[in-house]
Length: 74
Image (cartoon, rainbow, N blue to C red; front, side, top):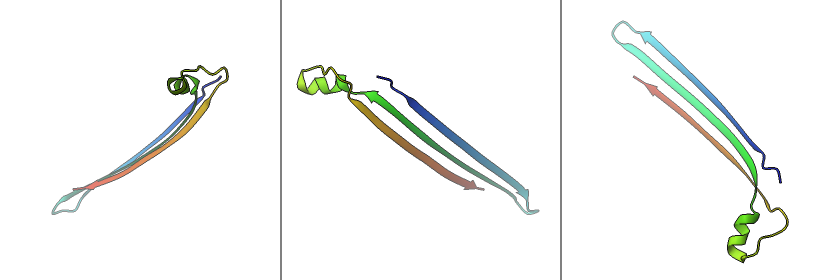
């Protein structure tokens, strides 16, 4: 059986620096997100519990969504 996989990642960042006369200000911001999905044939895994190897595919799908936002000012 086909075992397709899809993986998309977006990464963004922004750095701002300013001289305020009496101090320098720096701000850094970052964000990323990722969406990954895949389908696998889990028939081998099911045989671990049943001692029987199935003759049909046992599709198993999963989707993972992750993201992170961070900001630092100094």
